[in-house]
Image 1 (spheres, rainbow, N blue to C red):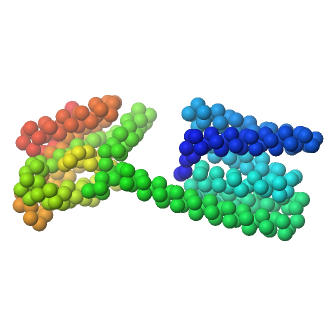
Image 2 (tube, rainbow, N blue to C red):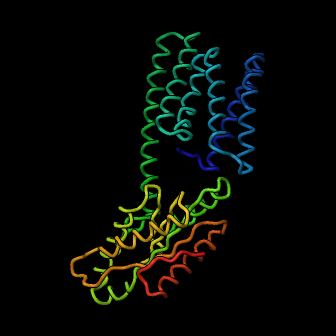
Image 3 (cartoon, rainbow, N blue to C red):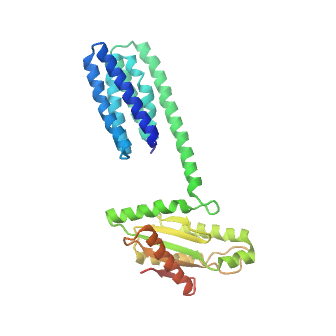
Amino acid sequence: MNKIPRNASIVFHVSAIITLSVFSLYRIGIGDYKHAGFFSLAITPLLFSLLREWQYKANVLQKQITLIMVSIAICYSCLYLGYKGLIYLFPTIFIYFFLFNIKQALLLSILYALFGLGFALNIESTPVIARYSIAIIDCIVFGALFSHIINKQKNALFYLAHTDELTGIYNRKRLKPSLNNAIESKIKHQTKTSLLLLDLDHFKQINDTHGHITGDCVLRAVADTITRHKPVDAEVIRFGGEEFLIKLPDTDGEHAVIYAEQLRQVISQIKLPGVSQLITCSIGVKELEGESLDEWLNASDKALYKAKNAGRNRVIQAP
């Protein structure tokens, strides 16, 4: 779903409030108190939404409701003002593509346009409505295309920013938001989440013996193996040089250890051309039990080094 940045949202709110205020004052000036009062009422949700935005309390749902209420006011203006009301459909249609996903925005903007055009027929001729219809259709099409392009670019940037170039899995930028989500879920819903911290054994020896290019092949092979054998909802993050972090949602410590042991065995079966030594790993396991992010990571890290100190190629669960 799209989201308007805070500063842009404030500008949109202020522009809409100024526009409706000028329109209301104009209606008062010509003695049209009925419509002036209606548009003054339409400013109220905008002022409330602007206040929420200013206080950093705004959310997408509140903005969506505000946009729909403003759209209703504009449709009402089309009923009595004809093309003078239709003019305001153009900027508001674009906002739908910022606040809703493309399918929702298309549906709502088409309904919005149909109501506005239909109401304007009350006082406008069919040829005038036909001309506005063509322009509004173009506006909807351009809004959808623009939204599609922006979403593709946003997804591409997200991928580049959060993906490890060598292995194709998440990089460290994904770490904090992912684990903080698990901590919030634990606090609110008491969901169980376990963490695996995996480190390849004697990886420096592989680099020294076979070279860094072969070492990179080993890292890619391990990342691919973890990805292929992970649960559907699990997340895999490259934690360090040869360290991988695996977050297991809805998994307690006992089941996490079972999975870790299976993963350890699968990794030990990796065979690569030119690599004679066995590829093994040590894994530390820690179920989230109310710790902070740093405490959770530290507990996993301590369990990992216990596995290292105990002889490597094994799984140790943190208490």
